[in-house]
Image 1: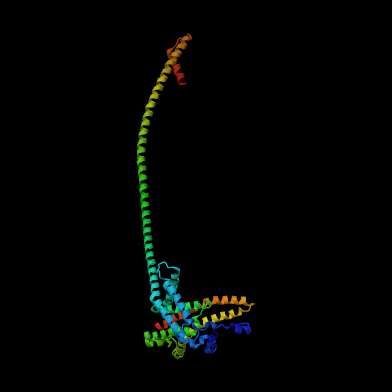
Image 2: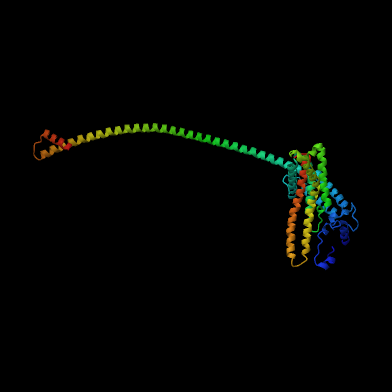
Length: 175
Length: 251
C-alpha cells in the first residue's frame, strides 16, 4: 500500500492520483473495453428487446382501448334499443288500456240503458197496481162508511135519507 | 493505509485522495495497459449491473413488466425521449451510443458511492476519453453529413457583419473548450464529492466533533447521490446537444 501511495505521489507530482499519467493507458484500455461491451450488450440484446416489449405493450393498449370503445358503443346502442322498446311497450300498454276502457264503457252503457228501461217498466207496472189497489180501497171504504152511516142513523131511530148520508160521507171522506 | 505513521504525529489523518489510487488487483508492481486493476474490477461490476438490469431483468419480455424490467423500461423511455427531444428525430439512430454513455456514467457514479469502492468516473483519464469520443464523433459526423456547411456553426449569420469574425473566434474557442468542460465537469464533481467525504471522515477521529463529522458525511452523501444522477444526466444531455449541432448546424 505504502509503496503505491509513494508511487502515485511521485508520478502525480501534486499527489493527485488523477494526474498519475502512468495509469492512463490502463484506465483508457479498460474503459474502451467496457464501453464496447456495454455498447454491444445494449445495442444487440437489451435495447431491441425493450423496444419490442414497449411497442408490443403500446399495441396491446391501443387494441384494448379500441375494443373498449367498441363495447361502449355497443352498450350505448343496446341502451337506446332498450329505451325504444320500453317506450313502445308503454304506448302499446296505454293503447290497450284505453281500448279496454272504451269497450267496458260501451258495455256498461248498454247494460245501464237496459236496466233503466226495465226499472222504468217495473215502476210503471207497480204504479198502476198501487193505483188500482188505492182506488179499490177508497171504493170499499166509501161503501163501508155509507152502510155504517145508514145503520147508525137507523139505529138512532132516524129515517135515513140516502142522499144526505151519501153527501155527508163524501164530505167526511174528503176531510 | 499509512495511518499509524502520520497519525502518531498529528492525531488527524487526511488522505482524501488515496481512494482514487489505481492499483493492480493481484500483487504489486508496475501498471501496464493490460494489468487488471481496481479500474477493471469496478468497470466490470458496472457492466455486470447494466447486464443484470437490461438483459436479465427483461428476459421475460413481459407485457406486464416485473419490477426490474419496469426500471429498465423507465430508463430506456427516459433516455429515448431525451435523445428525440434534444437531438431531433434523426438523432434517434445514435440512441444506443448515448444510452451506452449514460448507463456507464450513471452506474459508475452510483457504484462509486458504495463505501470502499472505486469511482472510475472520478478520473480525468476516463472522463476525457468519454468527452473526446463525443467531440470526435460530433465533429466527424458534422463534416460528413453537412460538408463545409458545418462551418456555419461558427459563422453567426444573424449577427452584424462586422461582429461575425469576432464571434467566429469566440465560437471556435468555445467549440474546442467543449471536451475540456465536458470531461472536467463530470470528473471534478465526482472527485470533489468523494474527497470532501474523506476529509469529513478524517475529522471523525476526534471524539468531540465526530457526531458533527458523521452528520456532515451523511449530508454530503445525500448530496452526492443527487450529484451522481445529475452529472450523468448533464453529460448525456450535453452529448445530445452537441449531436444536434452536428445534425443541424446553424443557429
